Length: 342
View (spheres, rainbow, N blue to C red):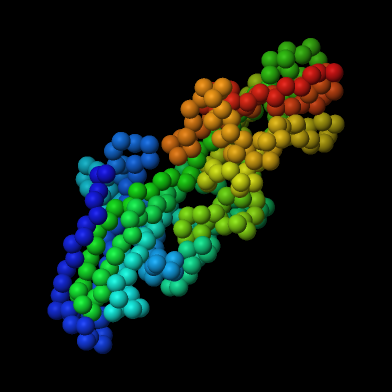
C-alpha cells in the first residue's frame, strides 16, 4: 500500500502521571485522504468542498471531529494534504483506541448533523436535501467520498506517555454515480404506418431511499424514498429520450426504482417493467450483471459513469400500451422481457 501507518509520537514535559490538567499534553491524528478504488496507484482527490473527520472510540461513540472547507487534498505528484484531528480524551489515565471515518463533498446540498461528542456511529449524519416538490436537489457534478481507517489507532495514556501525534492514511471510495438514461423506442414502433408516438409522450423517473447516511457511512434504515432530479432538461430525439442523473449509493435494498411513463388518451400510464426492476432497480442490475450467461463484467465499486438503456416495445398489438423489452448497461444487454403480442 502506498501509505504506511506512522507510529511515531512526540513526548513533551507532561509525562508525569500526577498531572491534574493535561491540556498541555495534546493528542492528535494526522490524516491523509486518497482514492485507490480499482486503480493500481493512489489518486489524489484535489479540491473538495468540505471534509469531515470523525474519531469513534472502542464503544463506537464519537470522541472527536474536525471540519474543513475548500481544502486541497493534494495528489501523488505534489503530495497528499495532511489534516489534523485533535483528540482530547475523557480518560487521560488510559490508552484509547479509535477508528477514523472521513467524508468529503458534503456541501450545502446536504443537511449535516452537529458532530456532538458521544453520538453513536449508527446515528444519522448527513441527508441530501429535498426541494419544495419533495425531489432531491440536483447533485450535478458534485462528488461524495467516504472511507474508514484500515486499522484502529491507539493513543497511549497521555499521563504516562505525554503528547502524541499519529499519522495515518485513509482510502476513500466514491458514493456518487453519474447515470445516463436512454428510453429507446423499438424499430417496430417507429415503423408503424399510423399512430406513431413521439418520444415526448414518454417520461422517466428514478427514485430511491439512498440519500441518508449514518456517521459510519451506512444507510439509515428509516430513510424515505424520493425522486431524483435530472441534471438538466430531458432531451427528446426522433427515436429516444435521454436524461442525465447524479445519484448517491447504488446498493440493493434501498427502494431504488425506475418508472417509465407514457401518455394515452390524455392520461399518464406506466410502461410495464420487469417486476425485479420495478421493485429494486439496483438489485436487479447487479443480479443481471453477475449472471454468467451475460458474459458481462460490472463492478459498482469501479464504475461510476454508467449508461443505462431501456428498449420499449408494444405490449400488445394495436392496444397502445408499452413494455420494457430490454435493459442495457454500457451497451451490454443484461435482461430481456418477452411478451407474446395478442
